[in-house]
Image (cartoon, rainbow, N blue to C red; front, side, top):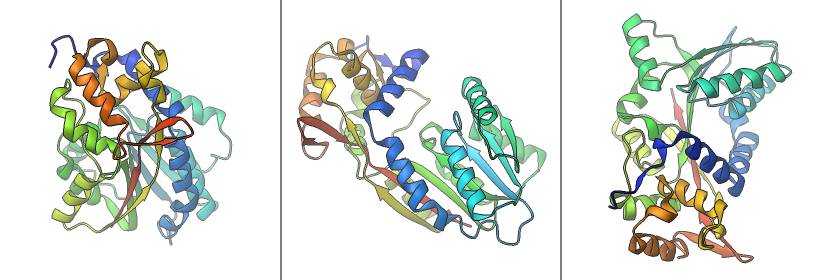
Length: 292
């Protein structure tokens, strides 16, 4: 590994920008939307049965865009029932955006919000120390398990917080996605960061099986247009390279042989499809629904 290559997470503003480019060039949000519209109502149909308040816990809720959509689906299902929505999010910046988003949104009258600036493991430790094992009706962990050190312990802990007929929704990249192939083949040659693990739905479902926790898993196809990655010096392409490899300025700092190999692989059918002159990387998502 070239010593000049460094983790993307070491440059916060570049990471944020590369993530923005990923969202702009992928169907990630449309894929999430399709799940929320078509599948979520059935999944949450029973979570509020005979309850005077519905308790929802968002782990890694970010700036709240997806959270508010989930809350709106819960409101549709249980009109007028008060909702207590607690958010665990380590980034102060994201929490500030979330609060702004709530302030600008309507129809939230029956929802109480609370934010905790901490990681999921900090939350876990605090709850255990205070022995305040509150039960939850719906817990969601969207695209955040990559940042957890001990995933089986985390799954077991949150499963233990479920009320009767409650569910956990876990969203992360699918084991059938190209991310899985990219990480397996090149992970050891890219700069690693303690912050983030290479993990897909296949790993998580194996952990749940071992823990003997019941779940259902839905896969939805999502793609990322990486065509710009093959144009030298293209700014959008360079930022997408950073996102793909979790490496800061990958295009200019990677050893040429490594970049050459990945360039070739990314155009292979097990990584991407070519459509209308575009190269579309397989960004498929898994939605794992864990039962109480």
